[in-house]
Amino acid sequence: TGVVSDHMMSVREMQAQKDEVAQEERRLRLQKSLRGIFAAADKDGSGTLGNDEYMELLRSPFHKEKIQELTRMPVQDLAMMFEWLDVDRSGEIDFQELLHGCDWLNEPINGKSVLKIGHAASSHCESIRDAVTKLRADTDKLRKRRETCQAELRNTLQEFVDAREALRQADVRLADAHLDASAAQEELKLARQEASATQGVSF
Image 1 (cartoon, rainbow, N blue to C red):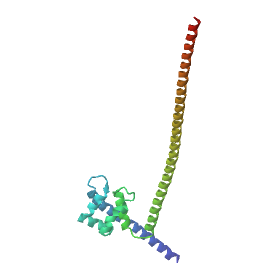
Image 2: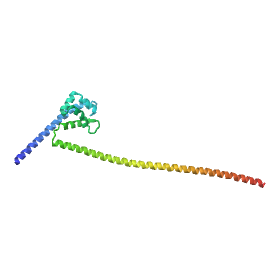
Image 3: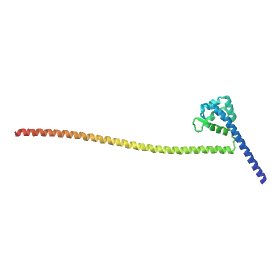
Image 4: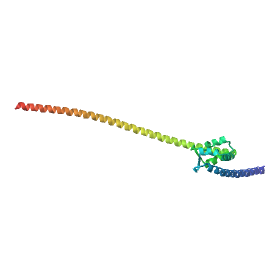
């Protein structure tokens, strides 16, 4: 029984190695084929494909047939594939994104591929969590900054109100001073008149 088990394990390992070699050869063929298709579609030589460039690629019977051979997908799904590959929603896909997507489409469903999907999903979730954490921190900073600005604005407005009140009171005091000065001048004038009248009577 032990010999049979060892033999089965050895056969499985050999088969796994053959599968790995075959998978790598398939991946290299896929990369070579896709690189030519990608270069033909990348009219501006930017190294990325926009949605218009990708749809124009699918309108070419030759390239459409090539991509269908590589992906084993109907045309309507190929039209949607751009959105599936444009994970970051930049409106563009590069060669690695296209290669990665087509590679996954050609990979047989097994434990390894499911594990890869799980790992990719976990990585994306972790990236989302990091982005949300950063967004919360930035939002908190903005909230604190807003509160600080509002407090500074309230203080500035209060200083303006206080200064305007002080100016009003100064105007009132100035007006009172003008009235007092006028009254003093009138009293001085009367005093002079009385003094002149008294001097006239004396003579």
